[in-house]
Length: 396
Image (cartoon, rainbow, N blue to C red):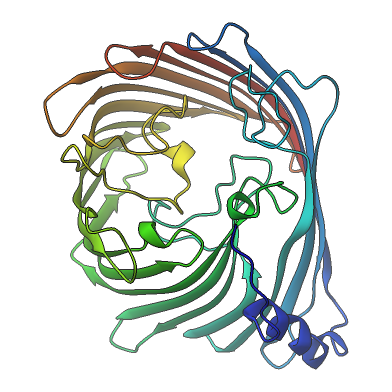
């Protein structure tokens, strides 16, 4: 177990700086949201199915902006409502499949933000970090306990249109929650530098990025990513629009990372947009060589490779995910369906396939509900798994 004390950590500095702006903030706003969710998991690897009934609430305050300064403080708590027929990884119920929503209460966000002009922004403290489509860094908003970082985030757009982003991360508050009995699962202590440069190129945006991640809690997982991403979209309100994305990244060992860390990432995706419909096809490859598979431990993983979450950790033989998706809005309702076919990068093994579907409905500007399904059919990887979610959310 790794422990450390940071008397002048990023979070401490943010809290010490708060009086600079808070005393003069006169028109801030209360932050509040709550989500009840029922999650059922039927995994053929277990004799018993899991059923988790949880309620998550967040409450906070966002100050007004004073001379470019503002700040946010937010608390978060999650609690199961009855029964505990699921393995939260913290409750000892290992006879059941995992539903990664343990009981927890914590300081979710606490940051100071300074925006001196329209082109520049500095954010210091515990905050959500979201990069591009969240394939490498995200807040994992799907889980009841979201992921936040103690970080410095700097963003600046030059007059030429070139955009620079730099993040320093010194701690990741994991979705397992601050109250988790294993400190090394609750949080990662980091010394990470993230850098991206992006510019408009034709109808889209070209971004080059570099991630240097020294994970001091799990030093053997420390790694470096060097990548290039191009994403474009053309919307035609009364006609046929389109979207396209291509991305490549190389992952290597960094700091005390294991010598086996050596893999690549490739994404090719395209689609059409017609009225309220979006049709999309893609192919994503997380390379593997039998010893190591390309890792994205800080991503919003639920958004990738199927909602059944069978590939949260990339297999050592890698993963190739070919997928087709459709989504459409019907007034206040939104429907989505996705089909996945999974294979290994090394050895050409067929892992399995999966159908996902969801129906969301916004009752009004504060309330929304969702029903969501995932059905993974295994071939040579894991076991058949079916998941069902029913949720209701209120956002103030």
